[in-house]
Image 1 (spheres, chains in turn green, red):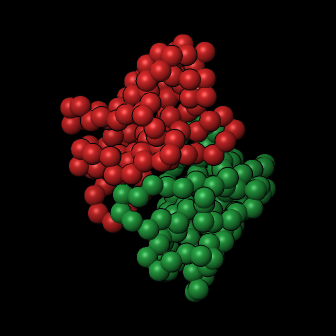
Image 2 (cartoon, chains in turn red, blue; image 1 turned 90 degrees about the horizontal axis):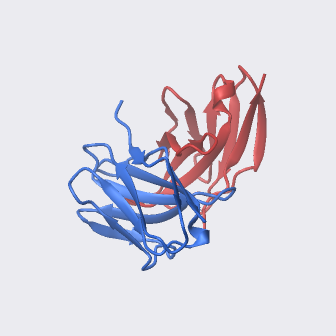
Amino acid sequence: DAKTTQPTSMDCAEGRAANLPCNHSTISGNEYVYWYRQIHSQGPQYIIHGLKNNETNEMASLIITEDRKSSTLILPHATLRDTAVYYCIVQSNQGGKLIFGQGTELSVKP
Amino acid sequence: EPEVTQTPSHQVTQMGQEVILRCVPISNHLYFYWYRQILGQKVEFLVSFYNNEISEKSEIFDDQFSVERPDGSNFTLKIRSTKLEDSAMYFCASSEPGGYNEQFFGPGTRLTVL
């Protein structure tokens, strides 16, 4: 089973920041937090990952709490094309399987 | 930008037939995976493959399934004697060597078993 919990759905206004929370209270020291998204029926797409420090790339920012029990994915200026299901996944070993939960269905509205 | 490709995009087969789903991973990647997604359900891990052998498989991946890397570029999933419940999207993914690398997914093959 997935080791994370996420809200089932969220709405966001186009152009505003989308903040997607994730709880992973049982995360262990060697586990990273990964975020992927799936745009309708397409293959999942990697967004970002982190261990304990906040991370930023061209797609998003990842904020991980100091105790590492939760994190937030931030899409700074959401567009309609960001409408997708967002998955928060914890993964430990190199080459390991991804265990997908139900994710958060983000709807970006004009 | 390199990408994972999958063929065919849609496969229709009769129950009991064998199908082979094909994937071309990103060229310098060494870890390969198959996942499936039944319509309306979550993405499920099937199998991972490294160094020409299965490194992990789920309980879904029973004797009906097999994987192969026949020629150093393709990575295939064979499903013998397909069942109605095998109807799903099948996604191939690959990742680089080295720790904690992200997996790159292909566009998927939609398998329909009639």
